[in-house]
Image (cartoon, rainbow, N blue to C red; front, top):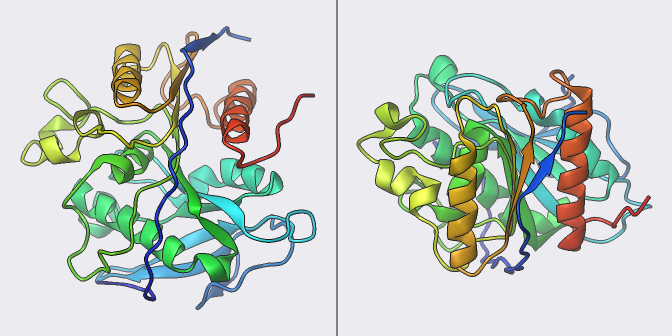
Length: 301
């Protein structure tokens, strides 16, 4: 396998943002291209850019570009990773969130990665692909009109794990990649994320041989990016206490972490196909978080 890359070293700027937990009450694929050629208008369907060749398939970035006239110059970006327990799923799962942020002026990307069901791989391979995706975007930031110091990561469930692990893990990258290109994100946007892979956490039986290095909750250090976690109080996979403990550790390390709790909501509640109401609520929380970082304009309406 190989990461498509060019030389360069770019460093993430750290931004600190603190906030207490909040609780909300109930209430097609695009054209495939071989090089990162930006689209000059807001895109409803993504531009597909191959970022990694593997033995089983080519992996693509599904790139939603903002309107270049409305948002000139370099823009902040976010890479989303879909859920599915590192077993199944596809990049289309995060299209709604990506389209929304492209409309706000970000370059929003949903990334393929290898899966057990499709590729016969384990969670370590999924993380290696997430690292490759971040390094590709940072290496090609100029062509993509992205500010390399403002590349966030986000995702839902196991995809939230991959995003958080980009900020915390060590030792899972492919050995042939350019190690001088950092894969650390500048911010994290996490929807009911898998963040604790310890003995009492999600997926321990699958990652038990390497959980200490793999589990985001066990590898939080100073310099952790500002984070927002959105979690339903009726999530049967990710307990509220897990989100609370993660944010406590991030704050203790000197960074900001927001925990937004959604009363009575189950795992996956944030998807538009599950609930338009909570899809909208989580978009609003995400927007406010990113606006506070200066990634999108603040909406006071």
